[in-house]
Length: 234
Image 1 (cartoon, rainbow, N blue to C red):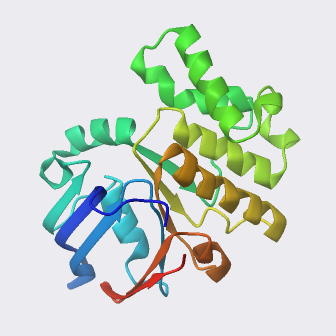
Image 2 (cartoon, rainbow, N blue to C red):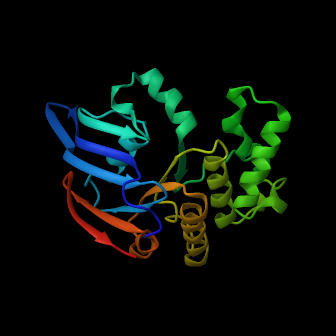
């Protein structure tokens, strides 16, 4: 593992999530504890309905727990209002999804620039950040290409650059290789590994692919809302 003990970025204690579906209460997560170190690349695996995406949503501030504490970088995000959580999320979390969600009529540069527009940064500052993010994912020479002119793997790298452009502490990835061929998937996994190792980005990835999980520093297995197994991969 490329991280040091005692440098936890994510610290969860006793988190649970419950919601009502019709007349029944559903509990995707129950009494779960978790620590993720700074610069760690963590994979989450488990069958459908095991609570993986629910956990990812809680850690990234998309949703709030019904019980328990979630501290990210020492900040008790479980105490935040929905509005404050959204503001925190915009600055501290980057998202990578299976579907790239690129806007077809915008170039790679313009797609990556989108998260910076609400902040009121100067055009020069935005350009510097976008160019740096695209260079980091190896697409500096493709910044003016449109999504239709890129391969699936290149589109995903644009999406990763977009997630990186605001320099977040935490990257969350939901099946980031699920829509890619093996070669493109391997390239994306290598990029994620390098981001954790060289840029000290903390990455939490949900995947069903054992090969993708094997690229991570550590794999956690969820089943029926509980953490059943922790396996050190490296």
